[in-house]
Length: 293
Image 1 (cartoon, helix red, strand yellow):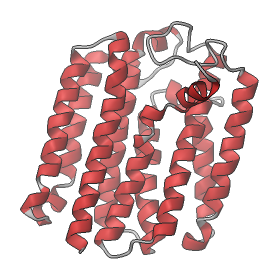
Image 2 (cartoon, rainbow, N blue to C red; image 1 turned 60 degrees about the vertical axis):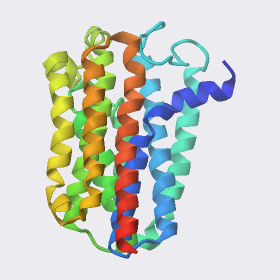
Image 3 (cartoon, rainbow, N blue to C red; image 1 turned 135 degrees about the vertical axis):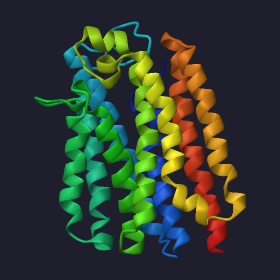
Image 4 (spheres, rainbow, N blue to C red; image 1 turned 60 degrees about the horizontal axis):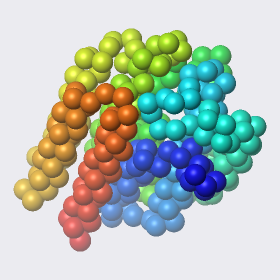
């Protein structure tokens, strides 16, 4: 495997739709309310991707230090654990990527004000606190809450605000739905790794409540997502309704695969769950563009 492939694997490309979907959704609402501004939207997109890559790099580095990841794991290959990349190099690249993300984030201050600075600092802290520090969130059953907030509520609402200049209740509701979709991506990851996590004393929600409860939460979560947006479906033209219907079909199919798969067979499902999230955000945004015009 060449060096570029190793770093792309560290970045965990199949999970990047989790951060991208939130920006797309926030931008979609900006379009709907005739507030679209391409520059802050683009900056939000770049910042979200960089922030998730930082979080993924940090997760790999600190899981290696804690011995959570092992050689020959059922999940995707970990370059540091396998000895392909040195831990010191990964840490340096993580910090450099964080610096670039912070620079991009500072470019958003003219669009939203100086109050964005502490928000950016909080996001940077989260990127490391998910796996690092004296109380790593992912090791204490709080990873799902962190994903809900930082991959749903924060990116959707901030992306909209930085274009519109105000917050909107329906956009806030949509941010929760995107966050719940992101939680489902994490559930698949932790469902696959439950045995290794239990051995490493990593108390994810799947370790705490078990695989059966996690599978039920995965299924219910998708239907809650669509139910929360009931005010939108009631107000939208009928031709918009195939979007939530398609998502529920794809989601239910993914759940069936979840309950009938184990080990490495769950790896494609991780990407599929993130893909469903992105498809929903893209199609709904496309509907908003049509309605706005």
